Length: 457
Image (cartoon, rainbow, N blue to C red; front, side, top):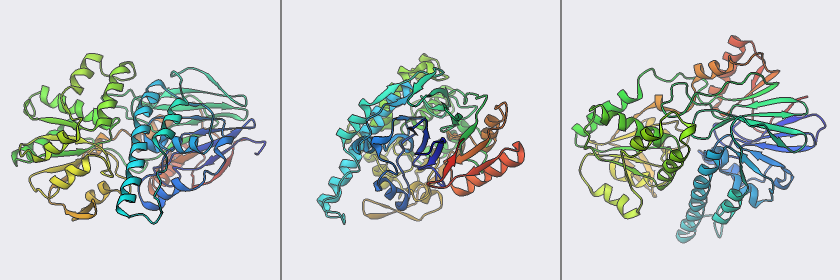
């Protein structure tokens, strides 16, 4: 290990997935985020590669938030020898309990399916990690309140600042023997109806900033207006609106907007709405328990999240597809890569009366991205399903700051960091943000690549 503090970028470098950044300082190793790689197969295969440093040599993990591309590798890290604490906000801890167990169940179910049908080159196919591994990772989670200075090994320390984005999401400020490192995590929106805006940070010697929307600006169209238009025209055709939604964050925002539209009489109050995602239902409970971390009052949160019928049993989920009545189905996963929404897509995609409405970023290689790119068919359960339904999206509903909002947050720093590292973006987005930071702020910055190492001395 180098005597000078270093930062190694082990994920979310040149891509929006697999957030993992390793700080080596004071003779200790602190991992910022521990995410799964998702999307196209070459990225997913990285999950199976040995971790670049022995997990047993990592002293602590600090999580920015609970989404699986930031937390989903934790069970494997623990399985392979990590024994330190995993530090995060209280709401992130509660959401990780849901997300990590669900991810482990899916890993086991996928391996079982491949083995039963002889579809794997590996005999037998194994899960990346098991439910037992996830339970061990959950047992290592330690809650840390926002804006509370907390010690780390090696003379380091940190504090969490609200980032917006989703419940519990944090900007991580690390103090180490070489100075102050700030990690933006995923920055939220300034006008988000549920979450507060990203908190300001005054100073950083080095900065890691996300760039998911680094080359784009969100539409000025109001999400409620766009959602009303889609629902109205679909219902007039006698169709169903299927919304693949991220179970944490996006599903709750959608329920809020649907509640708003019903309250205002802009869509029929008796239009059935179903939340068909046990994960999203569990996340609603977490949102209600942490009302102080969001904008809505506790009463409004209960009313908004109560706009839907919660579907828990598999048979209830199947029954939704046998009903011809117009309705709204909000179901996971958000990029149509798995979960109950796959069965609804199989049923409603061939129906020209219906609409599939995407409500968030669609990573390259996912079914969601293919449909938004105009695919005539998508592969589901080994067969090809024709796409005859209307395909639409609500890009303004993203929980990520756009390029202008990222720059707005950066302008809150009192002085330029010595260097800014751009992560968590496709190459075009990361480079576009690099140019804007360089040209508009005059900061020294670079878009990092996988396995880059930066000296922080």
